[in-house]
Structures are given as C-alpha cells and as structure tokens.
Length: 268
Image 1 (cartoon, rainbow, N blue to C red):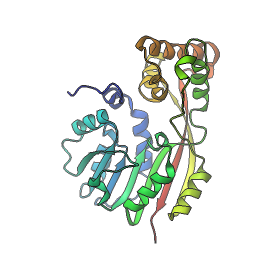
Image 2 (image 1 turned 45 degrees about the vertical axis):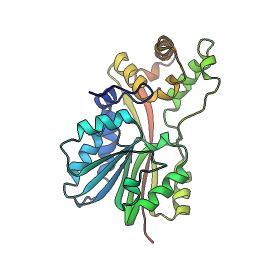
Image 3 (image 1 turned 30 degrees about the horizontal axis):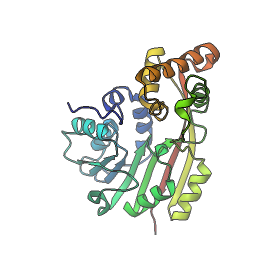
C-alpha cells in the first residue's frame, strides 16, 4: 500500500466509513433511467466506492473518475482495478486534465463534493463544455444551511482561548448554495430542464467513537488543517465532543445534513 499524503484525505478510513455518502449517491443514481452505455464523468470520485456502483450501472459505457486528492486516487485504483470501463484521472475539476477535456460525455455525476469548490461559475461552465447535446448534470452536494448546528459548535471551540490563535488566518473552505442561486447560475450558462432543490436528513451515529472518527475524517478537515500540533488536533476534537455532551444534548450523536440536488440538461 502506498504511503498516505499527510496533507490529503485519509482515503483508507474514508472508504471504510463513507456509508452516508454511498446512501446519498444511491438515491441520486436512481433519479436517472440509465441505458447502460453512457459516457460518464464522476466528478470527485473519492475512494471509488460509489464509482463502483456506477460502473455496474453502465456495463457497456465508460466512466472517467476524477479526483484532485492523490490519496483518494490511490485508493480508487485499488477499488476499481477490476473494472475495464473506468479510467481514473488525478485532476482539479476547475483545471481539468487534457485526458478529459477532449472528450464529450453524457452524464456528469457528482456526490458530496462540489461544496468543497468555491467557484461554481467556473465549475458549471466547465461542465457545460464537457457535456454532449442532451447531456445531463446529476449532482448532489451540501446545500444552504448544511451542518448549521454542528458548525456553530465547531466555531465556538475555534474561538476559545485555547485554539483562537491557530485560526487567525481562517478562511471558510466550503460553499453551501441556495437553490435559487444555483438555478440562476445554470440558467445564465444555458442549461435547460433545471431542477434544483434541498433535502434534509439527520444522520445518527452509534456512539461517541464512530461520531468522532467521522468528524475527524470528513467534516472537520478544514479546521484541523489549521492546527499544527497533533495533540492539539485531538484536543480540539475532544473539546467539540465535550461541548456537545454538556450543552447540546439534541446533537448526540448526529449531524444535520442538508443536501442540494441539481439536475439539468445541455440542450441547444
């Protein structure tokens, strides 16, 4: 197994605990009547856990599985080695590799990714250029109000005396758009048959330990990367868990997810 990039995702752990993301993806996949021969971009394929499901959906098609994170790419290659209809590409979605820009695709699929990209104008323009005529966006990401309760707790601890100096240059690394903003953007670019809507779900974890691991691996990454000391990273996480136990009983052990669902076509 390849060494893990300390600045990247913990792809091994993510692959093991991303049942939540897989459940979101399954519902998203079911929103399309697949023919089985589509050419698809999986935009932000992560560890390839969902890509594997897509690959089985289109046995006569082709998937370009794209991710910027090297650790995720290594894990995806392990997970997808048996699938001849999948090409894995290490690339930034805002600056795509030439391996994909010369291709036209039928579907751009993306699950639990686009909220990590701030420039949605450039992103959806890039997607528009990639799509064939009648090509479809099939996307879900964090939407307006996503993790609002959880983030308020993360920020409370972030501003505490113990941790505030770590976050002097803090910049928010996510974008949870309103449906109206995304719909307006897609209209301006030229997409048709646009359907953008929010769905809410509360995700519960079995215990403190599983909740903690999920926070550390997924949700708290933008915070933890500001903290240099491994001991302080752990203390920051523990402080959040203690705050929830002591003052936010309704948050034991759950996350307030709000997803933005995006369906649209390229019709000219």
